[in-house]
Length: 195
Image (cartoon, rainbow, N blue to C red; front, side, top):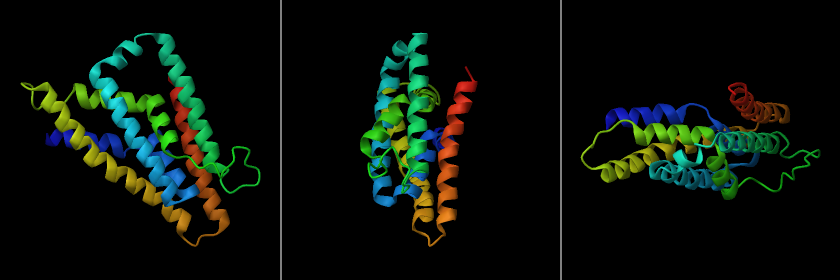
């Protein structure tokens, strides 16, 4: 169980679309908006866990076209979020920055996020510590995962909010927003380069 907990910690703390977008939304829109978004990510990641544990993801992703569609959809969504972050508070924002990413955005991101499926597959197919009772093991893993997942995402949100609330110059705040948005775009470029 300790090895599983460490694996969860290290897989979740590494920057991926969920935590990068969380910090970006915190830095662009503040704490309240970030909490709504994190709640959406939370719901989404648990839905993905159920999809993985039930075996449904294996059936769905056995069709190569589905994997390609999910990769393209997630790439477009990440780019959309990146531009929402970069263009927040901008007069040039054609994405309407007042339409702040919220719960639905978080759920959708997790449902189309390839890393969410890979991470959950790793969590629930490996690290067997209760092989005589699969259901109990899965329930314990879900609890452990959420107990680690929630604080990690709140820490990333807080890091983003610090930049939002600190009395920094507009140039510094914009630089942070640009870096967060560009980081999300780099995730897209890296995932497309792996094709």
